[in-house]
Image 1: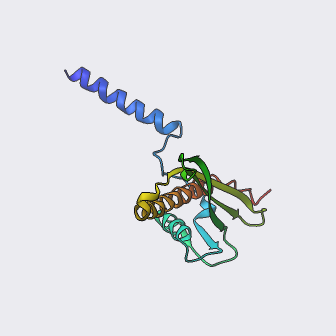
Image 2: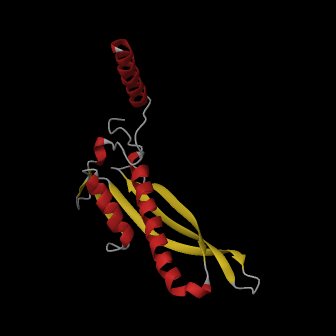
Image 3: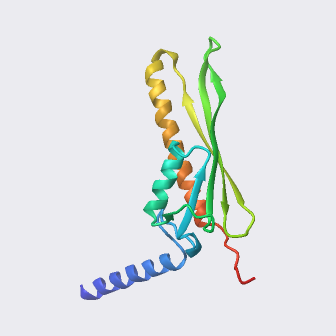
Length: 168
């Protein structure tokens, strides 16, 4: 029994070593370059929901938000929501929409050119006119969820930002 237990322990240790060695990380666990320990976050809507969500996530990862032009900058562009018709009821009324939430942002590090990024999130949305009040609340929740997903993608892109050597 002890031999089996030792083999199991050795197998688990080897598995964990291999997983961590191949770069496997749980979703939402990002490694940011040291140059991004401090960052300046700017946007066209400083009080918007997306700005607040990105700000919270940066603080969660212990990235210090400063207002110094010498540190890297994350500039959030305008976010927009578009609707496209997917299907109609026999009466000709819209039955289903595709919601498209899009945001662009730029990361500027030192003297490098700003690195542009675009994010687009798509969701289907059923529109039953008999439940207008409930659909309004559902749309608000869906939009908030799409913003959260966009904020997560912004952090993922920030973690993957290429930092050029200052010695070169």
